[in-house]
Amino acid sequence: GQNIDQPTEMTATEGAIVQINCTYQTSGFNGLFWYQQHAGEAPTFLSYNVLDGLEEKGRFSSFLSRSKGYSYLLLKELQMKDSASYLCAVNRDDKIIFGKGTRLHILP
Amino acid sequence: DTAVSQTPKYLVTQMGNDKSIKCEQNLGHDTMYWYKQDSKKFLKIMFSYNNKELIINETVPNRFSPKSPDKAHLNLHINSLELGDSAVYFCASSLRGRETQYFGPGTRLLVL
Image (cartoon, rainbow over all chains, first blue to last red; front, side):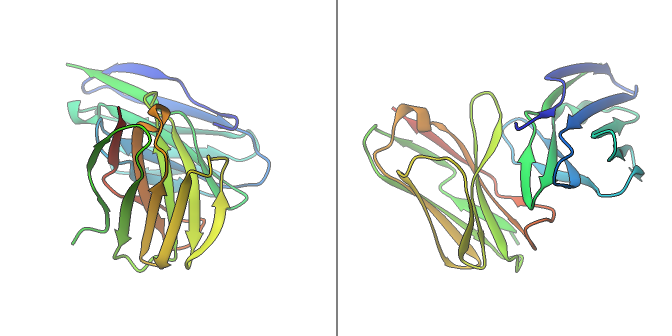
């Protein structure tokens, strides 16, 4: 997806913490979204980072480093319902470009 | 109460047919989109409209033609359907082009 890289799959245990990384090409960058998509459903918005730093929203946090072209989504106290795909999407030159998504499997 | 709605939810059709998918949003957003999500789950933008005007037209076959009768509606017409068109098509909308997108439930198209 136009130089947006994230791992294809990850596995973590219920109750644990997992970090999903996303790297992107920095040219024309305006901001970065994270979306969650459960199997068979539409993507839903999780976060949008424009400035460097960490933004926390309940069990989910998102971090951005504009200079490094790097973001991560941190999920704490994992629950079975967090099993889903997590899509990193870059706002570049007023277009939203999605990465291929990271499929997260949660084990009991 | 549905923010972004699409019809139909499922569409099974034969190769060579012409079909349309409809999308409506009641959020008062200015920008609407069509995405295609293939079997590998890669979400790829096809078209974007802002206030009924086409602003993004990615490399898609010209068998695909979007139509926006008003800013709350963006329909997708597909001519001469091919096997490779089988996918989930998502409509989305945002307040403006740079902002959070809200997705419809998707239309699962299967071409036989």
